[in-house]
Length: 259
Ligand SMILES: Nc1ncnc2c1ncn2[C@@H]1O[C@H](COP(=O)(O)OP(=O)(O)O)[C@@H](O)[C@H]1O
Ligand SMILES: [Mg+2]
Image 1 (cartoon, rainbow, N blue to C red):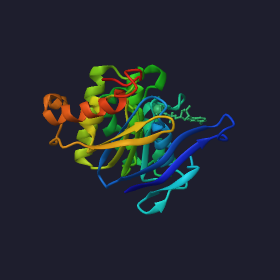
Image 2 (spheres, rainbow, N blue to C red):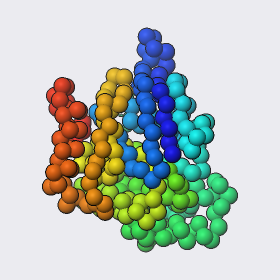
Image 3 (tube, rainbow, N blue to C red):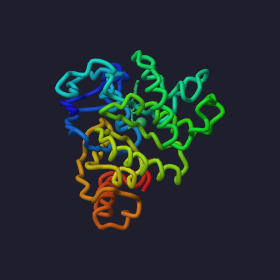
Image 4 (cartoon, rainbow, N blue to C red):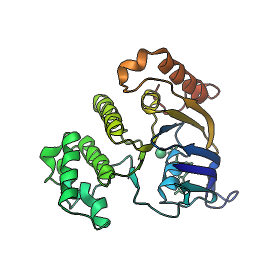
């Protein structure tokens, strides 16, 4: 579904205050696969996600979705950023419908779907409120509904639960898996939480910094459906242990990655 081929990204001019954010990234994500990206802060996770979304063009290599080269944002892709980025003047349901609106499909069916998603996210009562009337966590849930409203085949998520409290975060993680099992999508998900990365993923991509590269790709062989009670499972512990070794092994525990 997604083919990332020898992608590199340089911001500014190298050797002249420029930053090499990514180097030699090769990754293929299969249809309906969930791949999570973990790694220390600054290793290029957000940059890689933005390149796949088509919001930024890579300075090296190329990215293909369904064998078409990505040259800009696509209708079959939904994206969720770490901050909710809602339109302050629009109501919650208008915000959720926004992708349908810009695609010229803001019809009654789209409104119904938006309202159904708000129900799933537990914020249906706030449909006619403005973003500022909701907590940060509720705004983020609305942003996730917005990414799902046009039923994209690909979901790109950049630390979408980072701002939520631990309990809401676990609930949202399991809710995402439930949505995925009902309407399977290809998901590329960035997180700094190792348990979250493992519980979600078919494969975890562990990245290393300066410049951002893929250190290792770990297959997660856990049964589905999953929830956090699997955290005692030997396979869960093998995966989280391996990721910790890769991230903290040589450098010591200096990075802002959750154990
Ligand atoms: N627009 C930009 N201009 C210059 N440097 C950037 C830009 N975006 C990211 N970087 C740099 O690229 C590196 C990777 O950043 P980022 O992708 O945000 O990492 P992560 O999401 O893993 O924390 C960092 O060194 C960051 O400072
Ligand atoms: Mg980031």
